[in-house]
Length: 278
Figure 1 (cartoon, rainbow, N blue to C red):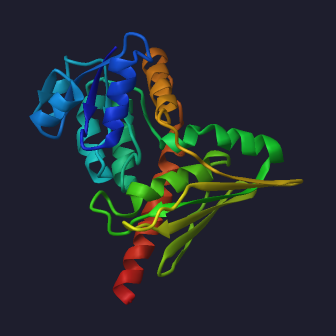
Figure 2 (cartoon, rainbow, N blue to C red; figure 1 turned 180 degrees about the horizontal axis):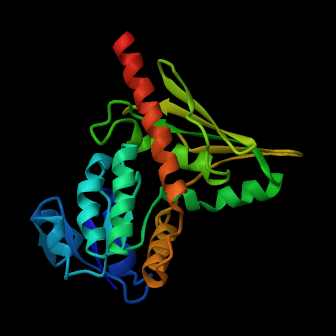
């Protein structure tokens, strides 16, 4: 499988090249072309081909990973490839607006190409372990960092991780979240079936390290743990991407892909309104 990468400024590009090209973790899958960054960056990654436009990857690759740090670029980069029938993995978030996310999904349907998107933390082994300890979750509380003024899409750049952690173990939310904006944090709660997802986003700066933490509340027990990220934490995501390309099956359904974007869009709007009124 010939893989193209869009967005070389993301350190996940280094992980992908290491796993696929150096370690051969997915057999014959190789990163063979990139878009974004400089020629020097492509050379640093050891990828032979750099293209000026995403569309130039058509015919060069069998599948693409879109991993721009700024999620607002994801639609323009993924859409033409999906319409050309090329499978695409959008490396969190799918988009920064629901309208862009829906357009990406429509492009996938039009081109008959599978598409997926998720945070690597969604596949952290701790999630299933915590869930198995408590049985059916009644509430999930996820804590993680946020940088409201991030140049890479604001709230969504870091915030998507905690949002996906909170939603992964629960049914798809059926209503908009309730958001509280504080000086040093943003708190969002959303109903998901007969349970609640609670997302606690703590402001991150150069001097503050905010760990990822998950608490799962069940009918008979409560379990919690800090999520540790090892050097291979992106590998499960790459495996799911490769399986999608091979089988044509979407790892997550359309509703599950849209849910984090809906929450993030609501949080972003609440943060914007709080800034205006401050």
